Image 1: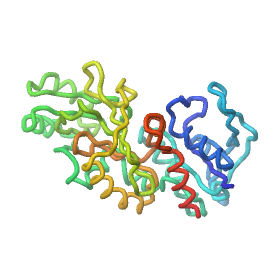
Image 2 (image 1 turned 90 degrees about the vertical axis):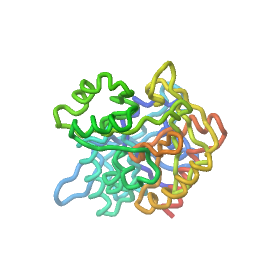
Image 3 (image 1 turned 135 degrees about the vertical axis):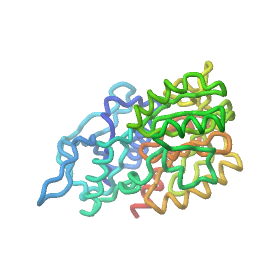
Length: 316
């Protein structure tokens, strides 16, 4: 039996019918592991002591749909004293998230095992991490200069603009050949050069879905979840109303995953979610990758079991 500490959003906020962290908890419980949960704000460090989760909850899963867990104990937990710490806080990738990774990094120096590795979380902001792999991405611009954005639109005509700290499709805009509303969109996202914007050439293959490819322990899950835009939307994100359809990986999907997987796991990223549209990677998600439940429900492939297998192997 291992003791696992999950650093996550409030358990009461979980939608367990689709929550990937819940599937991890359920599989870990099935194997007899001890489960403890806290939120990032509960992490504390003081000189002379070690990073501690104050008033963390040891939990037991009830098997019920509504009251799905119960707290069996409340305790202060030194992170270095548990077998594994799993950082599962949802985006945004904001200053508080960064500060949490620094606390987790200190816990590592004290002997904790943290997944994903805190320094790797900081080094792979989900939208900007693709810059390292230009051979796998569509034409992309990162800038705070409105003139650069306008020049990019003039060259590529049909573009997508997005903030760097968004999640679930929030703040994503499409500007077509006519450039309609480009100025207003730049003002909204750029805030007079105060905020950096990512701009990408529009990929028509979004109509077939924005594919989430999960990489666990450096190896891809054999199915992706294609999140297909609905009702005239340009966004396939499930949070934006996209329809999730599980599909076997294509040859191109495997080429991308087989190349990136070993690189990312060697950096301490046990779990990664690649977003792929057509043949292009659009994001590398490392903070709290999802879609476990949808892939498992539609294909029978047990993603959570694969993840806990990889976690146990990493701890062996």
